Amino acid sequence: MKARGRDAGPFDLRRVRTAPLAGRRSLVGVEGFGRPAAPGGRLDAFLDGLPDFLGARDLRALAAAVAGARRRGRGVGVAMGGHVVKTGCSPYVLDLMERGLVTSIAMAGSTAIHDLEIAMVGETSEDVAAGLQEGEYGTAEETGRWFAAAASEGAADGVGLGRALGRIVERRRFPHRRRSLLAAAARLGVPATVHVAVGTDIVHMHPACRGADLGEATFTDFRIACTVVAALSGGVWLNLGSAVVLPEVFLKAITVARNTGHPVGDLTTGSFDMFRMYRPETNVVRRPPRRGYSILGQHEILVPLFHAMVLREAGRRPARGRRSR
Image 1: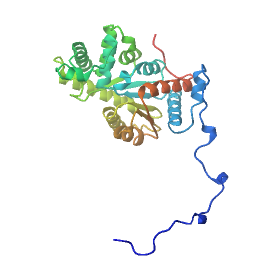
Image 2 (image 1 turned 120 degrees about the vertical axis):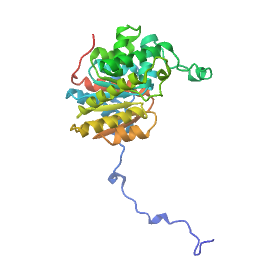
Image 3 (image 1 turned 45 degrees about the vertical axis):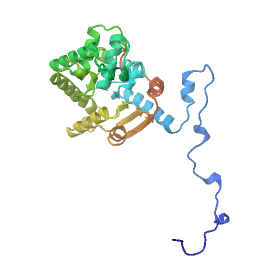
Image 4 (image 1 turned 90 degrees about the horizontal axis):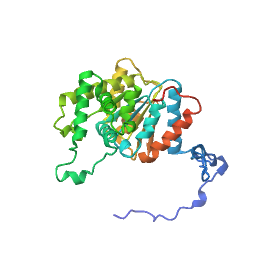
C-alpha cells in the first residue's frame, strides 16, 4: 500500500552543525603508527616498530604479562592443541620452558601423539584421506604401543600420562627426543598434563590400549592441572589452538581451585587461534581472568613472534627459572 503524504525529498544538509577537528577525540594517532625496520636490522627494532593498535598492542601486553609474572615468581601455563606441534612451533614453547618462562604445559591427546611421533621418527601428521579408504588411518604400531605403555605406567606410578610419556621418550632415548616437549618437561621437572577424550585419538584404536589405564592416567593429569591452576594467582594461562578440550579442562580446574579456597586472582589469559571460537573466548578469555586477550592468526607466525616478544620483555630483567643441561 502506498504511504500517504508528501514524497520524501533530499535532506537539506546545510542544516548539519560541524565542529573543529582539533576538538574531536580520535582513537588513532601517528604516535601509534608502525615504523618499518631497515633491511638487515635487529629484531628489537622490528618489535619496537610494530603498530601500537589492536592485535599488536594485545600481543605486546600479553608478552609483558608473561615476563612480569615470572619476575614475581608466578606461574605461566601453556595449553596446546595438536597444531602447535604440527606447525613446527614446539621449539619456541620448549625454549620458554628451558628459560623458566613457562612453568607448566597441558596437551590434548592429539598434541601428545604428535610430540611422541616427532621424538620417535622426526615426523608426524599422516595423510588421513589416503589411509581412511583402506582402513589404515591411525594404525601406526609404535605410536599406539608406547602410548598404551605410558598410560599403564602413569596409572600404576600415579604420575599421570604426560609425565609417563616424557619419561618413556627419555628412557628409550628416541633419536629426536630433544624436540619433545614432554621429554623436556620430564627433564626439567615441569608439570606436563595430557587430557584425553576417549575415542578421539588414533591410539584408542590400538590393540594395546586399556581404557582403565588411560582413564586413570589422564584423570591423574586433571588433578595435577587443578594443582597448577590453584597456584596461578598473579600468573598467566595461554591457550594455543585448543578449541574445546583444554578450555573446558581449564574452566573445571578454575572451579576446583576456587571451590577449595584458592581464589586464583589477578590472572591474565590469552587465546591464540585463527578464529574466535566459543569455548576459548568464553572459558579462557572472558570468564575467569582479570585480563584476557584474544590473538588471531596462524600459529606458525604468531608463536615465533610471541616468543621473540617474551624474550625481549624478559631480557629487561632476569626471569626466575633454569635451563636444562
